[in-house]
Image (cartoon, rainbow, N blue to C red; front, side):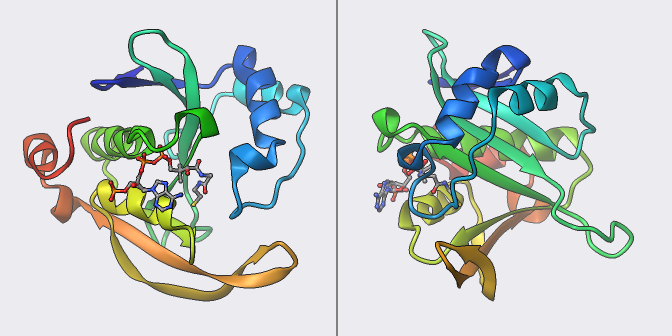
Amino acid sequence: MLLGNQIRLTPATPEDAPLIADWFGDPAYMGDYYNVWPTTRQEFAERFATPTGRDQGFLLIRDQATAQSMGTIGYWNPFTRAELFKGLELWWQVHPNFRGRGIATQAACLLVNHLFNSLPVERLQATIAIGNTASSRVAMGAGMQCDGVYRSVFFLHGRFVDLHLFAIVRGDWQDTPTYRQARCPF
Ligand SMILES: CC(C)(COP(=O)(O)OP(=O)(O)OC[C@H]1O[C@@H](n2cnc3c(N)ncnc32)[C@H](O)[C@@H]1OP(=O)(O)O)[C@@H](O)C(=O)NCCC(=O)NCCS
């Protein structure tokens, strides 16, 4: 478990599968910038029961005090040629009932800080559809900067759209005290 001031991040377990399957099948939860791809509770349960390596994670964002589930966050390796490119990619969602309270930004900061502390990873990135202002603000709140545009790379709602590539590198993070000082409290 990763402990923050207001939130905690816990790895998703098979017991979380019903909630996550319901959320990921709900267009209101996924928002305007994902294709909603219905997935069964069983598929999620099997996925969460399977041990993963250190280069991917699927976590629930929970209220620190009550443990109420508020969202999801995770990371994966987007590169297929490990000998050429290195880095991890983060993603996040917060349930509509809990948006606008800084939850996603705190979760992203907690995860960025944890990954730089715990893994010899040099670069953490997020790819965000142009127009997804809230998510872009989350990336910037976690210390990422915009590295550029991937043109026509993501198929969304019937057409290819452009993504912004955001990233923070280890040199930007430096260490936990420096990172905490530069970010909103998390
Ligand atoms: C993107 C998302 C995770 C943000 O969650 P959240 O907990 O509301 O985010 P925060 O409260 O930490 O807000 C982050 C910033 O976005 C801003 N913001 C929040 N909602 C916004 C909106 N609808 N439009 C514009 N800005 C918005 C906040 O004001 C804040 O800005 P600041 O850093 O300048 O203070 C949430 O809207 C969501 O789950 N969306 C659907 C899924 C999604 O798009 N995920 C990302 C895919 S790349």
